Amino acid sequence: MKLKNIFLGLITVGIAFAGCDEISQPLIPKQVNSKLPTTPPTDTTNNDASYQTYKVLLEDCMGDQCSNCPSAVAVGDTLISTYSNPTLAPHIILVEDNMGNFAVPGPSSGYPSYAFSTDYRCVAGNNWCTTFFNPIGYPAGYINRIGYNGTVVLNINANNWQDTIQNELLPQYPSTPPVEIRIHDSCYVPQRLIGVHFKVTFMQTLPAGTYFLLPEIVEDPIVSWQKDDLFPIGYDSTFVHHFVLRGTFDLNGIGTQITTPATADSTFTSFQTYDFTKGENGKAATWNMANCYIVVFVYNQATHRVYQTERVKIE
Image (spheres, one colour):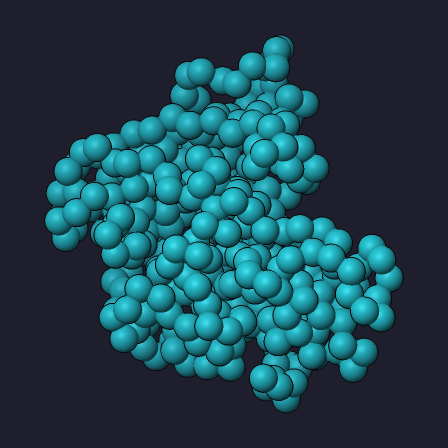
């Protein structure tokens, strides 16, 4: 796939406007020991209007050795910028999932030994890749984990992401979400620990089934090596990756089962913790916590369909 002509203009588009979906929260005083918090923080988000906007989850499956993948990143950036307008709903929350053969680190002929040496894959992403994503090619895009043709997975080339999302997918969604997810976190920076209170409210009755709440950690930005057809030399050693999936709270990417009925006005709360010194089998110890966000969504276990997504910056 050669997408140079289509995306040269898009690659410079910034991600700064994505902040409209970021819910600002106060910094909690640091605790005096290194234990994980055991009680929920005080919820100060009750009047935040952002929770009442529908958020569409856009997952970009890629790898740093996929030379076509930066074109999808450019399209994703453009879509986020377009749909960050508070008057335009739904909004888009992007997550970059590194998975598959193109994301395997290792020496690459003609490059320095340190190029492409960082492994951005995670346990959850690897599980999703083999269980239901299974992209037939990269880049691959997944919108709310359903396809516009009714299938679970949406495999589309980057050059038609924008048309597909804007013309065929977004009109399906109302401006207000069927599920509301409110989040408040306590962050203990020196100890690299967080405690998060999630409150799920079903604003309408959803199809019968079992529903899960799935929190994950993403990092933005990450500057790293990336093969890139948009560059004459074929690679970019300072490529800016946005909202990279680092891992999920439960490691395997299943989440927490919602034990209340998925009926209008039903609520479910969950207090969860994440330890950046031990998470993702120890890999979380090297992440830049200051650049990390919580992305959380509610999905149907049988269909994988996502009904609402939220993102907050860890602070």
